[in-house]
Image (cartoon, rainbow, N blue to C red; front, side, top):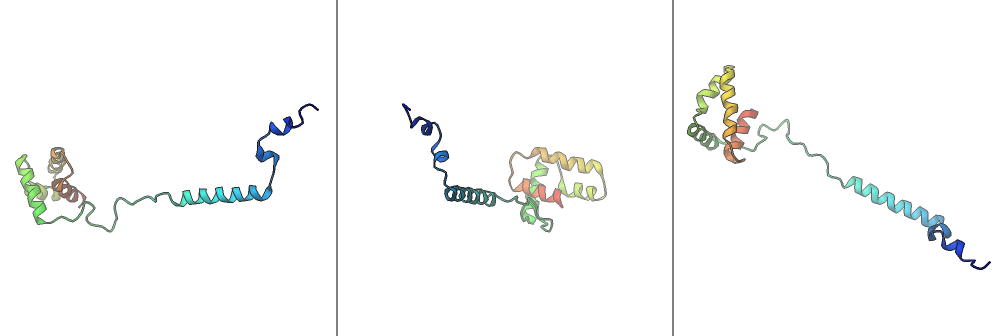
Length: 119
């Protein structure tokens, strides 16, 4: 028995000194941390409210007028095209979709266009 402490030094300390109360405390703490982490996860946000008629924000007549000016400058007249669209003219609808290619950023004109497309 040259080295009697050799056997005890081979094992980790938590295996040598087994304490049931300490083990239960650690399990409870870890469960609490896991539960807190799960509950603190962000909940999914609904992108659009089905009851909301303005998913891109409120727009007014001034916004629509500015969109009309924007479209006219790019060869698209919104007022007569919208009347054709409501009469089920597919080519007018295609021209309205083509107007979306003219937007370079998400500004007031793009938001107004999005609102018109949504409605």
